[in-house]
Image 1 (spheres, helix red, strand yellow):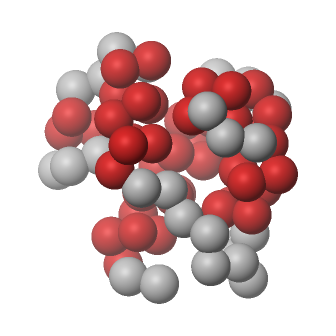
Image 2: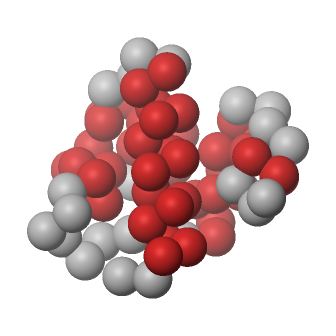
Length: 70
């Protein structure tokens, strides 16, 4: 996995945990299943978030794009 992909996953996971959201709740925001979120967070899996997911998080949590794109 690319370093930037892991960075997005780590930041999204921190965001989920900071807001005390379950993987299922986080999946609803991203229009994916909770099991997909679990797969993304599992370092053994090749699943990852894409740009659409990152944009949905930025909009939902009203973040600056710099949250993910420093």
